[in-house]
Amino acid sequence: MFSVARTSLLALRRDRAAFVLSFILPLAFFSIFAVIFGGQHDSTPRVKLILVDEDKSEASRDLVRGLSRESSLNVFTHPEPSGKNAPVPPDYTAATAEAAVKGGEAPVALVIPSGFGQHPVGFGPDSKATPIQLLNDSSDMIAPQVVIGMLQKAAFTSMPAIMAQQGMQYSERYLGAYTPAQRAQMQSALDGLRKIQSNMENSSSSGSGFSASIIAVNTRSIVGDNKHNSMISFYAAAIGVMFLLFTASGSAGALLDEAESGALDRVLSSRITMTRLLAGKLLFSTLLAFMQLVAMFLFGWAFFKLDFFPHLAGFTIMGIATAFAVAAFGLLLASACHTRAQLGALSTLLILIMSSVGGSMFPRYLMPENIQKAGLFTLNAWAIDGFTKVFWYQQPLLDLWPQVGVLLGAGIVLFLVARRVARRWEYA
View (cartoon, rainbow, N blue to C red):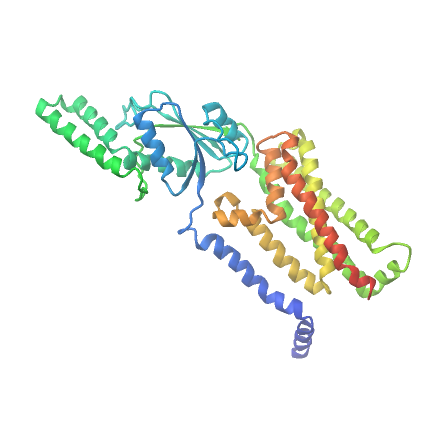
């Protein structure tokens, strides 16, 4: 028993790369999750918020300034310019804000309607406060809650004078009219509050949120409200891409088996070249990966009522691009490794890191901003974004060009690098 264990240990030590990777893997994977979750209390992801002010009153301007100062919100009143020297686009309207949320540009939009300044806040069950419209994408369940909380907080921190004035009106309604002396005293207090508010305009708001709903909000989901189990497509893409990466690296590992058995030398001694050999294996891995995606989405359609066939064209385009990219990735890993043990350890390390950062294990919109940007260096993020456009946002096929372009470009680059690395077998 001890002899068998000692022999296995010596065999692992001889393969130094596999030996080192077997210890690096858990440390690297732990570090990724520690970065994502460990600093959440210090770096809460900022919610992108589109803000439309149709009222243009003193109260609405105060509220806009208060929301813009919130560190947890990234407020946009107009689309971003297309370039450095491009003119600033016009402000969002209710229609363009709704279109932006539908297009996935932001998870939430707030529309402050006309007449808000007349009744901005309310107290009690018979409140006559003018409601603000909140338009949201129901795939992001966190963003609307954050925005509603920050909205109530901004009312306290940026509208103290207006709140006091509304409070006076409510007290007069229930307790009776003020005397002239009382009115003069209250007006003096309101003037003092306005001066304090004016001095605070350029300072950052601080403090914790408030749970009291003094501002009325009407919430409307404009994406995903009438869909049945549409989030199944997200999980099918997220989990599917991760396992496609494992499958592609495993199937490409046949190169190592052929090299070890001598079959690769016999194949290369024939008319076939290394380029054609790798291209053939790339084609096989691409077809295998695509068929796996088809099987996964068909399973979702059959058992989880995934709306699959109406989006068949978009699925086919994204499926082929994704399968090609992961196949090329697996081929590069197999070409770079010398043994199956090295391939297993290295592929597990890279795939789990890519999947955790790229959104296969945890939605990217809940990660810190720097991790979200790092996710754009993974195949997972681009594939998930593309499938989300197809199944969730139902965008036209032409809108898939960024995701398809990146995946196809990455696949070509990875294949060319794999061909370069595979030269070692030609000169062995």
